[in-house]
Image 1 (cartoon, one colour):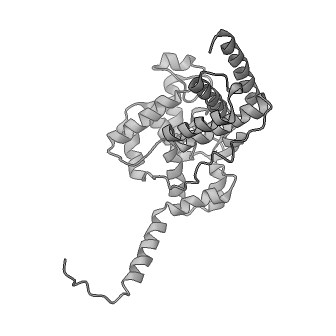
Image 2: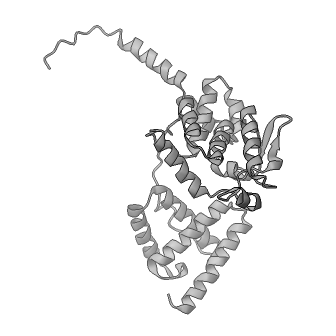
Image 3: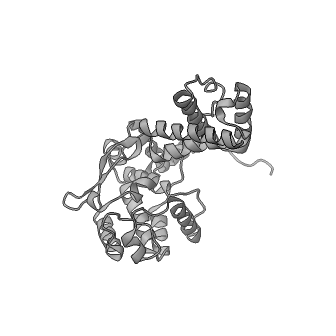
Length: 301
């Protein structure tokens, strides 16, 4: 793009970001939808308002072959928003770009594995973060955004502010987690944040932002590797493990739904598929059924 075209794109791009902000989209959604507009502009070296339907079809055909379906879906939604809210045009590609419905079950960490990860790192910030995220079933962003004023030691509970869907909720605060949070806060004494950014106490006490998300994810995977954990795990695995473990311990699904902040009980019901009692009961029943067969396995091998 030449200078004038770049200026035109920058103007439309800022309108896109402003519209996303006015619609109350989260920071993560704004970043993702904005990236979608930048990506397609870079691909064609043209402003998106100059693209034809055939251009868009070709673009998504290429995107499907080079990126995950998750990225394809995000870019489709981001460009749909751009065309409707910024260009005031109809979006015709929704029915042409349909990511497949894939239902997967997440890997679960055992209590032993979570303990090993906490104990294997000597950095208090990672120890405390892993314990906090697991013991309250928090999402990555929810844990990072925790502030001193969110901790209510009297009840005891934690106020999760603007979680997924911009919804607040209260979660139960275990005594071990409260002790760990107090111990870590004393090491940096930031006046607002529980997990401030910074390489040392001096930087953390002055920090106005929380720890870096990407760096935290990398550290988590590295700790898992050091513990010889070969499952496909990430920080959100701690939340899944929390849900599965509480079901194993007999917590009612309705109570778990409140703790996790699920809008739909069907989402919470997933954890009944991930528990040891459920799997063991299934195994016992299948073994009992198969054992009733009267067969002789004496064929030639």
